[in-house]
Length: 197
Image (cartoon, rainbow, N blue to C red; front, side):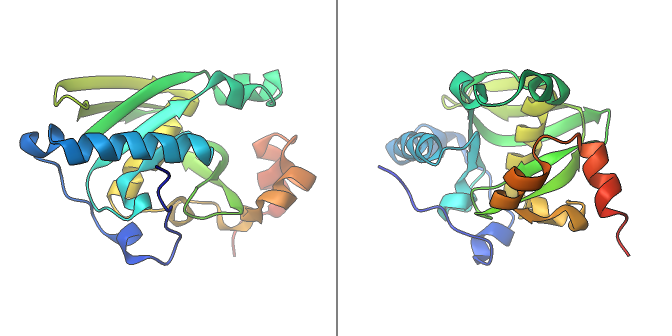
């Protein structure tokens, strides 16, 4: 079942989400929610979805960056972004325990800020501790685009949107991103828009 993705302005996107207990993780409602979130993310399509984006203030994230999503991206941009396929995974109660490198600047969008994109600085690498869908502890070490996805989704669990971190002068519609900016190196985009006043 496809869930409604809430948009910026909804209070749930600005609240700190609560952790899930071990008992909750294994109950049928959470397992069903994970399936619905996966379907919603793939249908959008997106590479990550946090529970607050479907109106539920709990610390649950699904992530998947499919190979077919990358087919239309020029090879030089894939290399620049260090973007590789990421298999489907569930992160429950995730915490970034270390971060290195950066800021790495790239355009980001969000299913809850539909129709817009902006350049957002992120750490180049992160280490995340979380639980999986069975309640087992796991550690993820990610770099490049995968690290960006994790930071973006974990931000959602703290009530933070990418627009809180963006270079404000780079905010653009998705249409204009495609028309004017998508093939330029981000460093050139930043130099063309100039520093914020």
